[in-house]
Length: 403
Image (cartoon, rainbow, N blue to C red):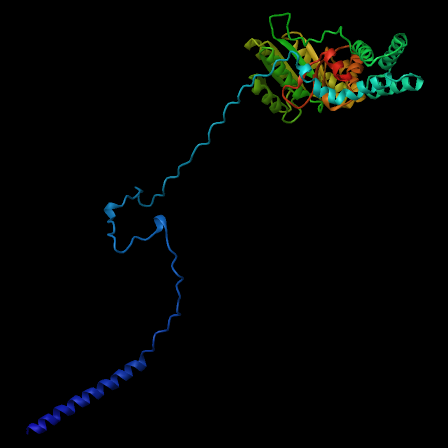
């Protein structure tokens, strides 16, 4: 009986096991295997340094309470700090060098360009026999230097007479003779002072005229430095309203020496700016008002109308004390043509020769004085701020003939 029960139990167990295998195999066939994901190979980790380095596993980690977090409201972006640009520094006021003896200090620079004239004359005059060919060569040197025909003929005649009387000629005697004659030609009896003193209780008024390209605005700025160096207070009038950046250029010159610039709108009325400049100069008690005018030379009629209007308007305050004509020494005889036109428009009282260091034609000093009957008062001898010098005939002639 026991054997029969045992056999029944074993049969039930075997049947159950076989049924489980069948069900398991059916389930596996009904569920397809999941898709196999592509194998991804992670790049090798790079070591981190500084703040990016991971905290070692064996060290205790900080809790959230121990970490200082920025206080930012939810949904609000972090504030952006905008730094204001630094305010531009005020230009440093310069102290120009004294004008007394300035041409003497610049004589070496002048002599480098002018020596050809003096040395050429001394070489020819040192010949044992001065025949007609030699005198013609002397004339050619003087004409090439832009001395002019009439002054050249006068100088040659005087040299002929003096050499004939002198007889034998040592180098020292020739140098002294030539120096005397050139000084007579340049002129030592002119009043070369720039008139900046008014007869009235008003500032001295100086108007600067000339063709654009001669350095007119730059000369006006340098003249302001000359006056400041002579301890005068200056107001600048930027009446050249037709040339782009002329007013900016003049204002920059003024700021360097503490001179205020009165200016108007671009392409505005030059006479109005000149009037305001003189008005401001009177109100401030300035010593001098410098007026830079336009240099257009399209037609003589237009130039005459414009400069004439400026003069009339300015003289409602006070008469002009000085009208300076700026000429480029390198233009030679063309500069004389410009000088004639301006002399017909306004009463020129003095001449400023710029770029005299860049030309061997120093004779233009003689020619332009003869042409206009007014003296050269200032000369420009370089690009430096203090290279504008009062004209001194002795220093100029000494630079011509050298040591």
